[in-house]
Length: 354
Ligand SMILES: [Zn+2]
Ligand SMILES: [Zn+2]
Image (tube, rainbow, N blue to C red; front, side, top):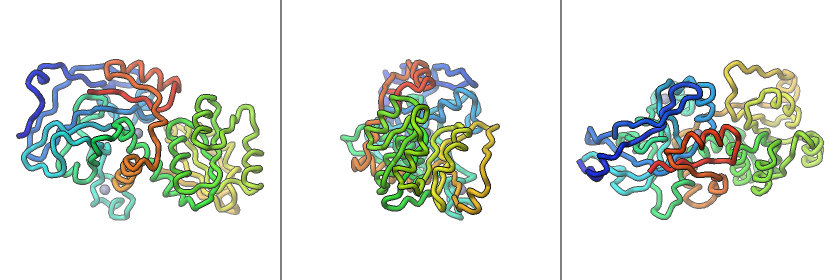
């Protein structure tokens, strides 16, 4: 076994942020994952970025994260130990890895709906920890090797970018399409960047928080404050009375969704990008779908193809995700970082794990 973790490091207490139920996140000492089989790969997490899903889980629980569990899934790091049979990567490689890979065999994978795979393989643990262990098969499917000069914080954003690529692909955005994004949180802003990269015409963003509107404006979007401006007339003016071709909802408030559905043109598409609390209901005029032929779409997750595509776009600097990173905290201060995220402070928050 090619273990390069130094002996003195083995004596160091390794910590991870363990989610123990809504509102409880404890820093705990954890066992270092070991190379136990010839195809194990041990990654030292360098940077793990807080995602809206981590915050949602922390606040109200999540069906996929049963406590106690280590949260975190947007990360990059360095391969520090490998089993003898590992060919995909070598010690010292900088990498990013998706939080799950699909089975390829189930009904949904066979249909090409990989995001709905019923048999996903998950990481050994979440990335708010110092180490993650994966297998050679996992690495073959999802691991992306990064160049030595990559910004590891940016590389950690391949995962949320992949989610957005999935959504924008589903919207079938054509050159010149006008897009309205509701919400300028990190995911709303990533939707702006991907829409622009795919050749959108006007990108309008509706966001009540001034700091986030400013961020949207800096990306080249037309930022609207729905509390003081008339979003509907701005959309009509910008689209010459037609309505937007694509409406992307990147917030979790169904009342707001109901209030903006009429802003999409006949034959246009509405993408419910963000998740909603379990008990949510949405009321809509069925004739929006029948006579106006508006398509109501949803999207969550991504395929490994999209994850690799996202990492490539970051590596090629085709998309500047670095501008969304506003704060950094060491793992020991993760609770303060969560507080900041809960209070909508900044955009993407990086946790330095090693
Ligand atoms: Zn995420
Ligand atoms: Zn599957």
